[in-house]
Image (cartoon, rainbow, N blue to C red; front, side, top):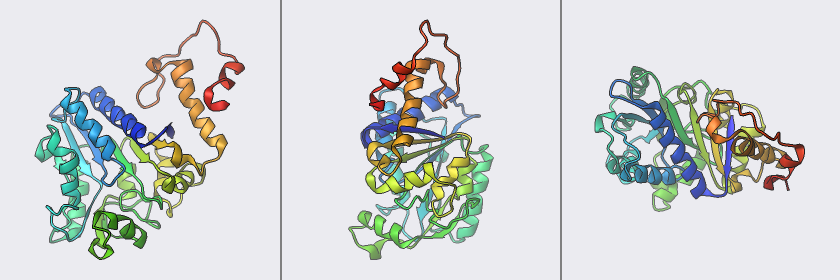
Length: 299
């Protein structure tokens, strides 16, 4: 697992948007071989979406050969409701880019048969060869998508009853009125997310610090469903300083030291986007222990 620590939400958003841009460009998608991207909603990805829109408007990124699958959708509210995730995605991202409407996939929370809708969604993902990169955020209780505490870590797309804490947290999007928040949702499963070839998670704010600590420093636990990504071969978390408040100082220094080694000793040009070493440098001067301990984060 890679943990990238940046100063604040804006820097995390910048990093993640740039990473997604570079992954799509490196993949070089075509009509027959699209880049399949899993996407979240909520406050976490808004900054990422703003930056992706800027990349598109600046001519740096096209979404014509990108296929998307969203993580979840509420049950029982109209598709055009301002707080539906369908509305959210079109407002924050899709209407501003050149993605083809037929390449956008969002669960239908008003389907006549919700279980069949979930089954069909899984089949659609498989029809595109699986998801290349799944972007996600988490709740303060560590849930990913709507996989609330206690969810099976092998779960698939399904109907899910929302936890009271999630309903309360989401009431801010419904005029602060908890009675307006849907009680159920359709969501991809933890297993669905884990099947993607890469998982990238955004975690920001002190209110998510305990969840990050559970994910990084403790074991895999269905009460903190994001912890399942410990088992993923290509997992990336980008967080801000506030989110690290519950981590041990040693843990924070360790992950910052890895960032320093890549950027200052190995050289970013020698490292692939997903952290693989493309070329082993042979420096003219071998770094000493003093060089390492003189890094700003070690002081």
